Amino acid sequence: MADVLVQEVLDAMRESVEFHDSGLTDIQVTATWYALCATVRGVPDALFGLRNMTADAGETLLTFYWVRGGVFGCMEVLKPADTDSSAPATRGWLRPLAGLRKVDVEAEVYQPSRMLHSELGVKSKISLHWDDSGKPAVVLDATGSMNTSARPPLEKLIELVLDGVAQTAPSAGRPQ
Image (cartoon, rainbow, N blue to C red; front, side):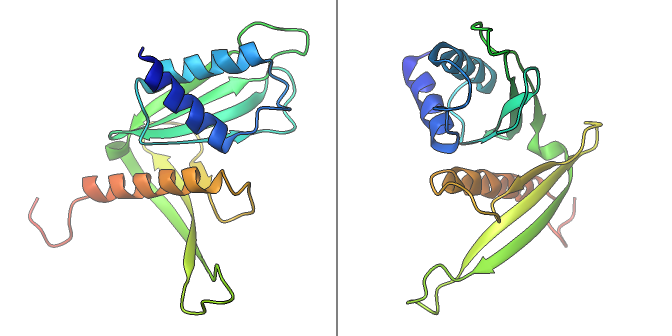
């Protein structure tokens, strides 16, 4: 795997997740980075990570979501025991965006600047439902408060999912 691909994935990881007090050693963060690169299989179009601040050993500490091409992916990193210095266990899945059964969308319109009254912004929350997953919906929520550096990657991920669904959905009124 080319070093440039690895670096771009690491940059995306660090943009959305704070690692400094995650409980992972530098070696474990590096192992997570390589596991994610091997799963994404290249440079993601968008990547966003979440950290579970209250995870105990064996529970999901980090969850990464990404889009690459027409595929949506998820990788979870399990928190190792405090005495464990080996690479953390990971698990995940990939699903084609074309296989989405339903996407629930919520939008929060806000005024980013009190000075420019005509300017409005939109924060989105989407819930992704697949037919075959047997798992609960994946929720990507940019409506709440979060680290300002984490919001843009999440908003980009939401935008790419919505664009991908729009491209694969049959157009209204057009013969199929």
